[in-house]
Image (tube, rainbow, N blue to C red):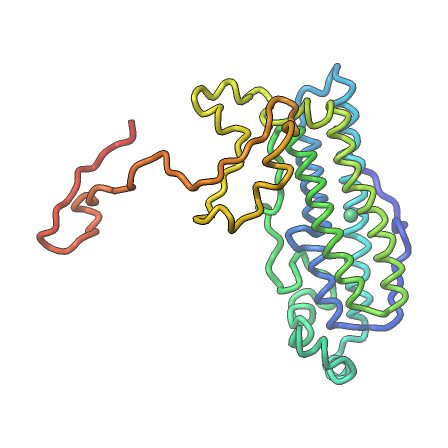
Length: 295
Ligand SMILES: [Fe+2]
């Protein structure tokens, strides 16, 4: 169950209409790393988190996910309000004024999003800054709590990066004030999910993902589990072997990183047989293959 009240989480202030900037703000609502994505992602992960009953750590993480999902709804609400305020007064005449007053943005963006006028009637849309509709494929909820926590930290990092860029694209003090609150919240959120990894025992407990599939279960291929492979034809052309990923104890605490300098192949040349006749893959007279069902 959700409850609501009429207040915004933080005041939304826009000091002057700017239909061109409204288009940029759409990225923070309906882009891949926008507020609508993280809202849907934390809801999906929280609702699908299994085994929380009787497990205090998982219960705590489920509560944290759903609390933060609720906050992300508030961020969608704030940005939708911001877009509506930016579009207030967005008549074709003001659109032309905006274009001449800010030629750099006009050159980059090519003007107001016509769908803000034609489709949404001066309201925000669940779409990105290019008008691409928001997609459920942006959401990652993999059913492995450690993988989801790392994913969420990364989404908050990419989202905060984009918010910082949009912040730098305006000098409107009202917008900057609202966005600075969201930058503060994203700062917490990206670390909150890394802190959740610590609650799960830290990298040595959760890595590799899945933690049950350790290198020693991979037979002969276990020898490749901690070896960085360089494919520089001339080993002197790469510095990759100097990195932490090629030296010292592994982050999962279960191995030692090593470095393989020379390009090498473990397999033979790839060669596919001709396609069956019904695929018409060749020319008349070419050999045809049999239909082979996977075994
Ligand atoms: Fe947010």
